Image (cartoon, rainbow, N blue to C red):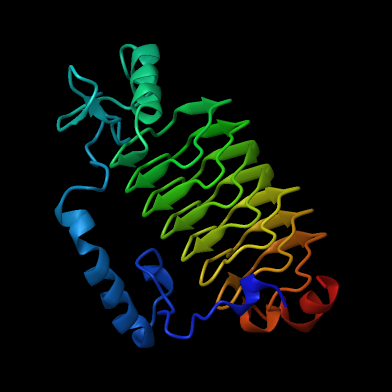
Length: 261
């Protein structure tokens, strides 16, 4: 079996801070461990600010605020829909990302990113909810505790990425390559994946609950403690992956295992 299967994760906690909804009593200590490990991210304000949009009646979170020098600043702002000059705020966000290797606490919700290169970029505590990523080249992309919920990824290459404690809830993946990546403690609940590849990846303790997987492969992957519950699948391959160590619901059981080899 290839190296992805042979990684030693015996000492790894079973649950991370992204999964409070599924944590039971036996998971409390691991949760507290991770909270203690990452608490300074919150205390130092690394997570994106969750200020409401200034537009009356709008409940969306506002985009990041930039000062005169193009740096992130504290303050209230509008969401993309209500921003007075959408072209300017988009350009401010593009410039901020392009000029830095490490991006911390950015809120770019609703922005479209097309034909850009995020290779070796590192994102910590950022929000890219409801975004569109088209023809994205992101080899060795890095993310920690960021949120991409309800975003759409089209024709993107994210080879050899390292993405942990990150949420892709409700995302759409079409022709996406995550091949050779570490996707650990991530939330893929409710995703729709079409003709995409997670081959040769470490998906330890991630979640694919209620996902729709079509023509998508998980070959030669570490899927220990990875949850595939209530999923809809068509032509999904798990060849050479440790399926017996993954978590399937009753419907997934033996028939699922046989059909996916």
